[in-house]
Length: 336
Image (cartoon, helix red, strand yellow):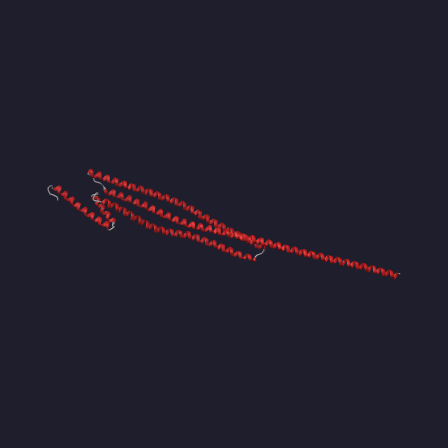
């Protein structure tokens, strides 16, 4: 509906009409790409419309939705990649922790088996050899108690280190979240400032350099992506440390059980030793009684023999005296 009266005005009107048609075509193309989920290409077309008419229809809403979708997809991609990476790292770390405990436990059980094998040798010993070897084995059992306590001390130390790391990573995560909130506030403030400056430029008929604003927005978005990436990384590390902490808690519980089992075993062995010593003392008392009875019998027999000998000597002396008297009597009779 353009009337061609003034050539200059008519040319401007035709130019505006062509521009309007171009914007309409660009808008349709941008919407088409948007509906096909080709957000990157769609945003480029929408931004070309912004350069011509920043308030055309609802392009700002489309651009905002595209940015939100792009950010969401980026976050999901980053999270998936980070989850996979951390899962692999976590599995490797957990395997190292588990393997370390498994190797230590195997070594511990080998030492127990060696001590039990030595205990079988006790059967062949007697007296001082038995006592000395039994004392040596008791000392070895007590050394195992020290081994368990040292392992528990190492676990507690590692747990404290992890708690400290968790606190540090939590602080870093909170700092990254604060930075992200600051960037978002800065982004919103920049958009408002951009809109205000654009409106002022349009009122004054001045050129508004939108390309620079777009570059600033993209740079700010990149900073936001980096902060979100850092947050995801710190969260993944927190989960990894938590997993190790849970594994250490299980090890700690196992070591507590082993300490209790060993303490019971040592107590039982000390009880056996006490009973053995008691039985040995009783046996020694019986032996001493037998020896005393034997000595008493021998002493009695000795006294009996001495008594018989004395009686025999007395009889012999009496016989000799009688014979002497008879001989003397016979001599006197012969003399008479």
